[in-house]
Image 1 (cartoon, rainbow, N blue to C red):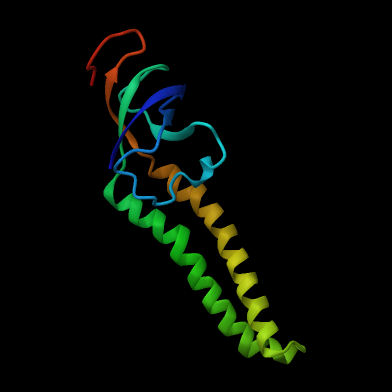
Image 2 (tube, rainbow, N blue to C red):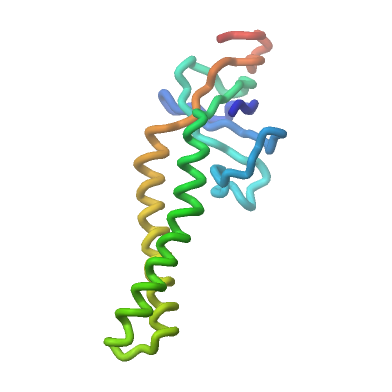
Length: 146
């Protein structure tokens, strides 16, 4: 998936790109961290040396969207189902009824999966950043650098 944005910060081989929602956006959830902000900023690999102010084209690997959607949606749902089943069968031995046990089990495993996803985000997503593929317009009016 390709997207156009503007470089707002550069730190070594990484750049922050200000982007807007686009026609190819399939609501994968990759930008959920930007909810409530006026502009969305995405961290990307800056292998071509784009500078602040440059208008750039950013490309995300096709498999990235699938993995992000799986991690953000399917893993917590599976954790909740497993927690509900386990709580239903195991927690009555601890003095809870079957229904409260299922609820407690589901809540605990969903919360745990979200904490694990936070760690996975730092590990997986930091190694699989989208890439700047070309500069469309330079901040100092030079066109078409790549």
